[in-house]
Picture (tube, one colour):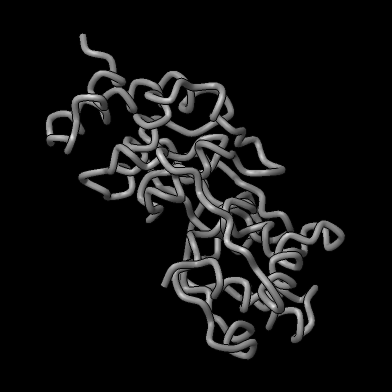
Amino acid sequence: MKSVLAILALAAPCGAQNVADVVKQGEQVFAKTCATGYCHGVKGTSSGAPRLAGRGFDQAYIATVVRSGVPDTGMASFATRLSRPELIAVVAYVATLNGITNPTLGALEAEPTARALTGEAARGADLFKEAVRGFGRCSTCHEVAGFGIPVAAPIAKIPASVAALKAQMTPNVKTAAMDGESMPALVLSESKQGPVFYDLTSAPPVQRNALPGAAKFTNGSEWRHASAIAAYNDAELSAILAYLRAVIKP
């Protein structure tokens, strides 16, 4: 059987069949390396680690996380743990889990070039990840430019102002009732094995697994994003918004 390396060497450009072969190899590597123990579930479902399937991740983001890991989490760098063909295959496979039907096999060819930040954007970058704020920092729940914990989905739209950021609604947060408790919940998955969700009662959010029928969810919650950013003043939030505008693609 041809190795993935041979497939990549012959692909210029890659045909659909070659991409399918690489994705299949990526599925096999993922099953052996990522869908085990306290990690991701089969086919990118949630397990000990967050769900990967259907999160809207683009391929550049996937490649960065696989190669560099996520600081201060269980997601380690696989740059030296997997061969280059295996890395390319896994990135392609996870891309297909996020709706990318024809992943680019050269996603790992070029190392990302760090964008030089200055002024308010540079200050905002420091504030986003500032360790002295403990779990009150933005990176407790958001991953940006390879840093942080992706509890929430990738930031798709940056608020136009600090006031808009504070007033931002949280339509994806529901109210969960379980074991006599009520809590704000960000649902990751609901399956026959039972729901998996983040309990937003405290920071950092706690991932909880419930038995089938043990948790009931209702739309809406009293939880607001404004409470999660209370550690920052308006000037600091303005700098963070400048940072997001500098590094996040429209």
